[in-house]
Length: 145
Image 1 (cartoon, rainbow, N blue to C red):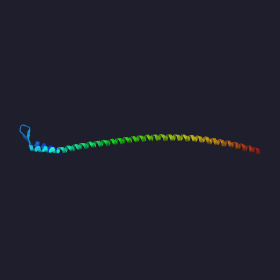
Image 2: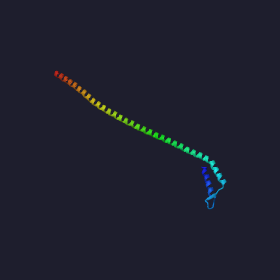
Image 3: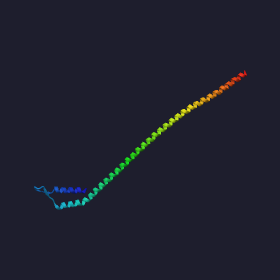
């Protein structure tokens, strides 16, 4: 900022001024001091405007950063929520698949048992028919003798 350099000039002027003996005071060129004060007055509004702009810009940047941070947090929460939902969906799918496999195994066992019973029943019927046929054959043979 230019104001700071002008103030340094003013400070240098005071330090280099002639001091009044035994008083702690000094003699300064009135015109030179008034010129520096005038320059400060001219530069001060520009520097104040610039400082105000910097402050407003800082505030705007902070608000944007906060907004962006909130969006990132919201996106992260949504992602976490969707992952949890996906986990629940996956968990339910595994449960359903296990249930389907269990039911299929149960049905297969029932079918195997039913098939064995049916096969045994058919074979029993065939055996009965064969026994009857064998009886007929034996009786026919007896008649032939």
